[in-house]
Image (cartoon, rainbow over all chains, first blue to last red; front, side, top):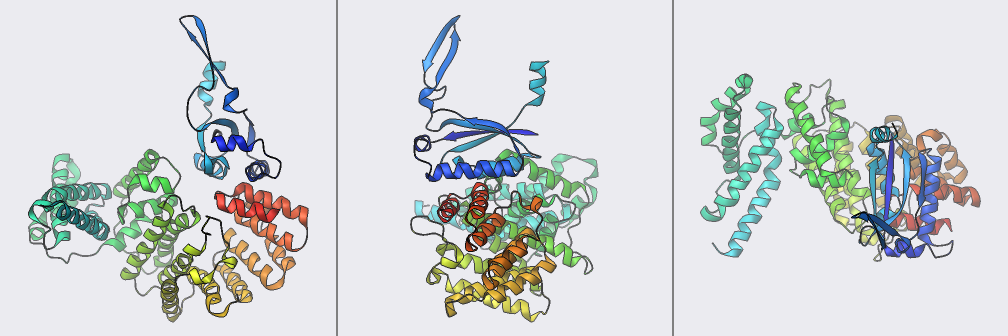
Length: 122
Length: 410
């Protein structure tokens, strides 16, 4: 079954993205990505640009309400997501624990909802 | 009562709860096989103690007080259930009641039976350790869930399911027969060691949960030893955990940096814990029956020797690993063997041992890649080593270990 790892990162982690190739956080991510590939569990995913680039849209009273900034005002912000094909939640938690962001931020694990997808896509 | 008096009463209750929890749950559940109800009854008794003791003072025999109170609560519970088949165990329980009212300190210690129940083959092996931590040591589901990386609700549900199975599947509260004993004892030892392993892997000193779980595991092994003093492997397990525990404060630099075993300052190792480990290992050896935990402890004792001799006898470690591979051919054993052979006979020999392991088995096994990276680096195969380092870094959970490996990778 598929699990999404939602990666929440600290401001420091976002800042580290601008460092050069030798940065330890970047190195940890490179190694993590490689480990996912070699284990044959990676389905997809992508990093997102920093929360400052976010724009949030709501429709209120039929009008567009466009807000500069991310949906939630929290210290850790969504920095990317990874979809993994794994046999169990336990395996997903193992991979979440290995994620470099888990040490400084947080990684939320959610099963992909196949049932809901079926309802939506018909 | 004064505030400080109240505080000391609370501390007494905490202490009694810690020391007596397993004894009381084991005794209360041994007739009914209903661990969950026994635990509920004991929590009621502890709550009652929190109200009664600060007023009336701590009773002469706090454990007996708790048992009597828990028993009443349990009997009430069974009466209220009004289930038809409450027949036999209930009657047994009730018949014993008058005797219980004048309870003395000595009631039979049924913890050994409870340990065997927790690690019964009919129970999911993944639940052996959580069950022991809860029913013998009284840890709450929240803390156990934390250590096992699952949500408290999930852990709570799994524990309830396991206890229902114990109650309904006819699992007997008994010490296994001689014929079954070695295998059944193995399961108990495994479960205790698993608790220690969780405490061990979780090195990040930030939260203390890991450390505490290692201490709980040592406590469990001591309980088991008290109940089965003649078993060599119980001594072996305790020795193994004490050796590792002795090195705990040397595993991190003041800045939280990870320090591998060979670079640890052995002046920081705990002398008393090592001495106790030595004694336990000697006791085990005197029983004349080798086993997995004794061999693992023997490996640690060679490492401990460095504090005396200033060097590590790698050929001895390699030999113990070789024996261990016969009894317990796990990934951990093979990887440890390869590392020791690499130290004793050079990186080629170490890699040859590693290459005997099937690659499919190690795609997520971090230590394999760390050892492989190290051996390749010694051989001067920089790019292959870098690949292996990446795998080891990518599979590491601990930030300090990750940093250590990143630095080594260069």
